[in-house]
Length: 269
Image 1 (spheres, rainbow, N blue to C red):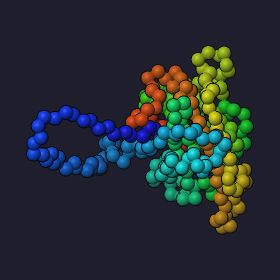
Image 2: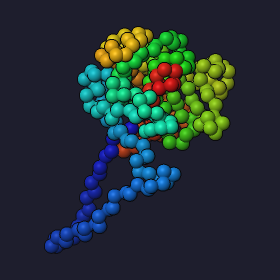
Image 3: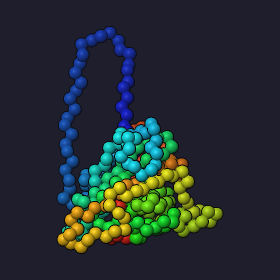
Image 4: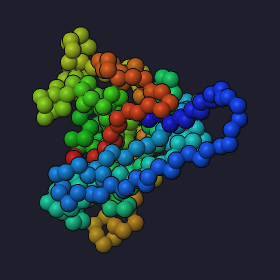
């Protein structure tokens, strides 16, 4: 997510003259949300994050608070993916304030760097140890979906649990449009187009507070239960742009489309 850049142009002028004040543009009205939920709504526009260029790449060790990350601000906390109310999200069924999730991002000429911090008031499951296992089926996980061209085609997905086990996949198009998973879970090297994996990736995860695979005590004595884990990821542009010829490497002023997700309780939360 490259940073924006401004440019100044200088022109040669004739003899000096009295300055003429520039015209005052009319005020731009604020967008008015439509009462119809099916109409385009400004609040549905994806959030933007300005990721700074990283002159010195971080050592990927799971520490997301080291000095290399000081230049990258934390994002706003994640929202409940199911929406803001019933029937999709009944009251008290979603993550509370003690289940905060935030990310940081940086980039350089070779990699996109991600840092994630997951706070939890419930059990953090971490059981999968084999690469390209379907982590979200059982474990707590952090996920990134990277689509440089914003095309919904040949985008890359990465999932990681608190043990640092990773699952990489390429989705040729959305599942609703007949999309097919390409990964080391469904195919092996040499099996043709169905196999894909990330070769230039580095990932580390660690539990920094509490213990994974320990359930909280039953109410009302669970008020102080807390587990925090962090993930640090380097995604190579060569992997992200593989089979994605319409995408471009990041540049200052450019944009990449990226989505993030955190899954708990086998997708139930």
